[in-house]
Length: 101
Image 1: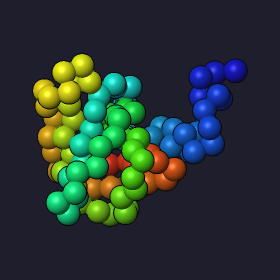
Image 2: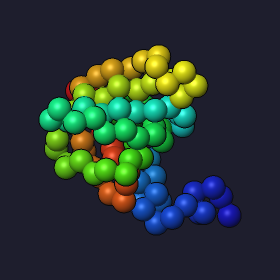
Image 3: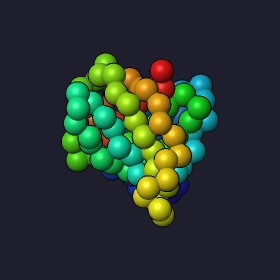
Image 4: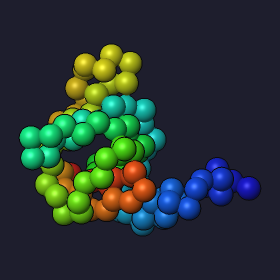
């Protein structure tokens, strides 16, 4: 039984969706802050690629929403690694898939 087999059904679906992408995804441990309509939503980066990022958060964001995402070094929590515009391409069960624009 592989690592993917032990994931809950939502993560299994997210893994399949991410696996269908053209760009390779990398597991990252970082903090995400998503700015939407003046509100900051915090989360944890699950994985990242050259095209987008997958974030785990307690709050949901509507699909097709345009956002600004900042990714911070998990250790310092203040050093910005990346800050870009993105679009929510999928969201389910506390996991948000964003495509960089």
